Image (cartoon, rainbow, N blue to C red):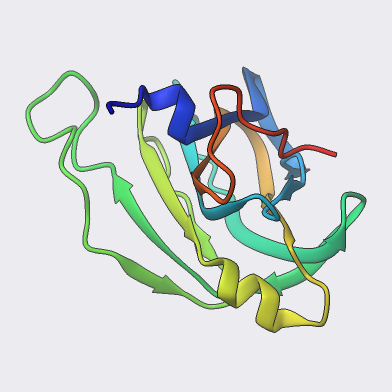
Length: 164
């Protein structure tokens, strides 16, 4: 039996795409991992300034408290601005500590792929199964954040919510 993308992946619009979406410190919606085995955050930048923000990943036990910074892995797609050749080439999977990584300045159309390991989230403290992405120190980066939850623990035609 063949499944369609939306039956095996839950899409969450974690930070809506608006001009200057990353202004100061911005945290995405807090995503509940209880019903999913994997989570990937995608940051897509638009026309950017020379400003950079620092991306961190935060874990917590509730939908209102994801504040503990954790280590994570990420890739970038920033070799060129779309639709130029190489704009779809991903970097190697890179380790980030709990202090995160800086977004590359002046890269219109950049993609940042943040891989969330639920085991790392759970290891941060007892009962932790919520996660959020934070961008700090930016003064006007145009961007959005999409969370893709995959490998549902209880597959069904309409996947359970991840925002509670």
